[in-house]
Image (cartoon, rainbow, N blue to C red; front, side, top):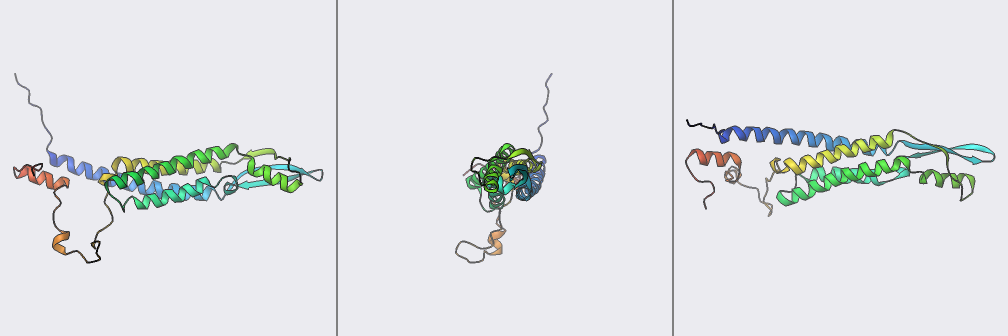
Length: 213
């Protein structure tokens, strides 16, 4: 007794790939833009606070995220630029930019979490306030903003991972003009690309070999 295995038609796979590409593109754009905004906003907020002894009393000290470390804000800007650049390049260039996007997110997470226990900024302020270079901050506490910055970095990282996985299916910037600056003709802009999946399926339907020279 022979068993016949049903083979799905190639046409049924193309729409699924298109949907996956569109969904991943939307999620990556949202995560990248939101993550960059969250990381930048978080560095402007209060990260740590404490006191130091000045004139026999306790002098309050505070430090914003930008006082503790400038890495999360810088990497958030790099990540946002990389997110835009993903659509300006293709093939290997797109993979490289997507990798930069992912690394920016990972670096933002690491820098933000490192800032949770960093007291250098407040120690410096304690020395300035007391006039004693050996003075350090006392009763040091931290807010939740470093963790919020880490969440922003995680969103940027997710956008980078999506770009690495699905970036080849994403569209690029429109090429209305050639490199020489002359506008492309409509006939040239409508010329079918034999490497596009739908053109391969059409060739198969016509009984042609799309891999032939």
